[in-house]
Image 1 (cartoon, rainbow, N blue to C red):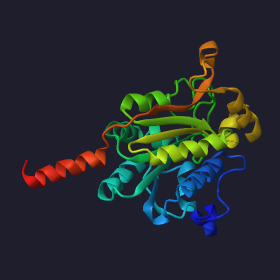
Image 2 (cartoon, rainbow, N blue to C red):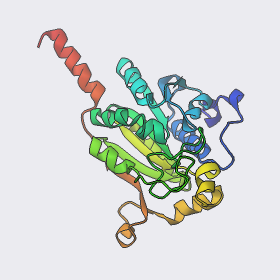
Image 3 (cartoon, rainbow, N blue to C red):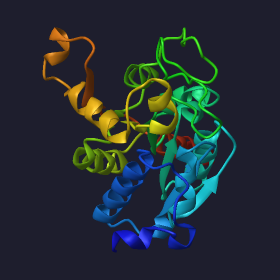
Image 4 (cartoon, rainbow, N blue to C red):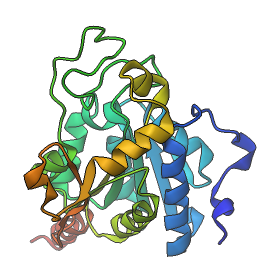
Length: 267
């Protein structure tokens, strides 16, 4: 199936700001699904609220646009009722780790077969540039005019500690590897997380004097390194990208089905 067949063209053009990285994420997600050849009716995309959540309106799958922070909770219900479907949950900073943080760690702990894509633009863009759990210490934001005093979550370490069986990170600069990570995440049996560093030139870039979208993407190029390269030991400020966790472990829906079967047999 051609990639454009996965897009609801009647809802174009999209609402994302010029230079926003989320369009790059959507493009690579479409390419990954097209490569896998998954029928549209076998995919359910669930989103919450925010810039990242608008992606569900543009993708021609079964889509649910849900409450803020509850995308993973809705997706869990869908997956339990229809384990044969592929569940993809694009999220932003808040949906994943602020109001949605509790759902995130428990979805990882259950190792339920859902693919979570976290678009990390370090800010709440849709509501005016407030700081998020991923803004970082010292970052400027609408709600931190004198600098943010919170440290950021490390999504990779949080996901690893919570029990996710596939954890990866990439950036919008590394588009080719992004598609490959999406392919691996979608085909992995278990809870899969791909963090994508995605530039927000309108709020985070402007308020923190990081330049335009191209400059922010060059920053991703120059300040990231492949996991295992050893460069982070020499320069701790570098951010590692690639696959951090890829393990085969019991998946929640499969284990739940076994419990149901045992209960029917009375043992």
